[in-house]
Length: 199
Image 1: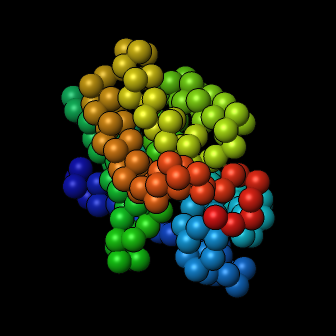
Image 2 (image 1 turned 60 degrees about the vertical axis):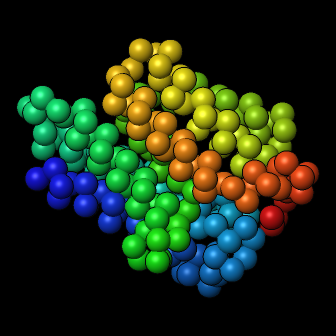
């Protein structure tokens, strides 16, 4: 049964909501702006409403399979592991979706949904890191990178389980890998700030 929940999480995570909302608005978000299917690019190209809808949808992709796992395996001794695996599968689905030839988004919003489900208080600290970075430096990508790097440390400081910390390490590494072009632009000073229309 756990394999079915993990597969469901991956397939749900693979649904490219940002791309679908863009198509409905007559825009292929992969061909404009940063080319990313996530909420940041959708917001820049299509406005705040669709950006927020994309953010909420991508967060839900992480939350829904975890909620299902928590109900199905509530009496299992490994329930925390099963919940975390279901969420991580959704995250990997978003980053490497089968529907798009395994070329997906950067996973930040889906990771946010996962962390909010696992540890809301710890997530608030990571959100504070993100907001502070964006306000001070002006780069959403840098905020995402620092928040994802801080999350395992925050979970460790919050005395969370090794399962959650391990998942956060894996998720953080994937987020950094998916942001490799942003990292290059940040290093050479060509990354556009959050107020820019396009990257």
